[in-house]
Amino acid sequence: MTAATSTSPATLTTLATPAPPQPAMPGVLPASPPPSDWVLQVSGISKRFGGLQALSDVGMQIARGQVYGLIGPNGAGKTTFFNVITGLYTPDTGQFELAGQPYQPTEVHRVAQAGIARTFQNIRLFAEMTALENVMVGRHVRTGSGLLGAIFKTRHFMAEEAAIEQRAHELLEYVGIAPLAHDKARTLSYGDQRRLEIARALATDPQLIALDEPAAGMNATEKVQLRALIDKIRHDHRTVLLIEHDVKWVMGLCDRVTVLDYGKVIAQGTPAEVQRDPQVIEAYLGTGGH
Ligand SMILES: Nc1ncnc2c1ncn2[C@@H]1O[C@H](COP(=O)(O)OP(=O)(O)O)[C@@H](O)[C@H]1O
Ligand SMILES: [Mg+2]
Image (cartoon, rainbow, N blue to C red; front, top):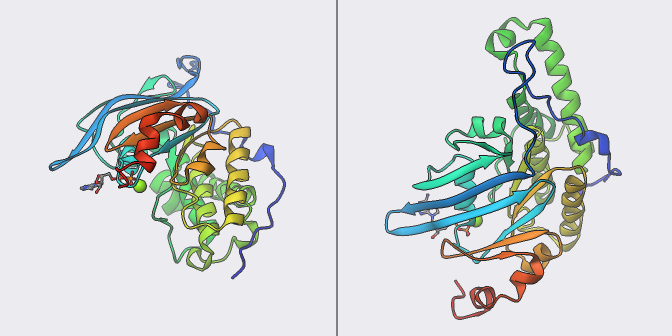
């Protein structure tokens, strides 16, 4: 198995074409407000599982173009937070705004359409589908021909399919696994599967891409490559929310960081600020050690 990466140089144009916003009525300019500098603003999020308070009054503000880190010891509530903002878990309380617009994180499909895409701590790919097909699945969120178009294979549908395939190829190129386009997802190396998940998430043209421990299980070389990819995504004006366990790795990459411990925010700020916060030091090095 190759660790595989004909990492092609950054193709800026690849991400420069987000789907245009649909006007509310034909012929009428969309009444959307100017895009907010805040991509995600959430506050007061709480989530309880039986006797366990997994999240308590969690909030954060993520500015456009940032790489934002969410760190904390195992069991701190990081994945639960992702699951809440992307609609997999219904929170007990919480306010949610995406690009200045309130949203209800109730349905995964609607969250994707609203502009959040994610990857999973435990990789979730269609194992028997090719890399290319996995990305095409992600892209279908953005298209409109619908079921009738698919059944009758209308000209519009066929053109849309071709465009989706083309875009999927571009995204595989972008994440550096273009030569593996026709390999089944399950045959890819671990690091390449993580890249494929990122390509699939990017296929929805997200405003915010949320990565749950993307570097977990990667070797040192793969981590360096992943870091370069995240830098490239930021450079292309996307916003990244990153869960990570490796504090050193995250600190060098993120613009801002939130630290969770036992479901509570214990520190928020620049990496330098949170690194010298006594509560953070205690959570990682102290008796907590959970
Ligand atoms: N679906 C669930 N049902 C019950 N408990 C859960 C569920 N999901 C997460 N938890 C619990 O919530 C806490 C936070 O978990 P998680 O968000 O996965 O932490 P992290 O990602 O920071 O390691 C843990 O104690 C975990 O066992
Ligand atoms: Mg987790």
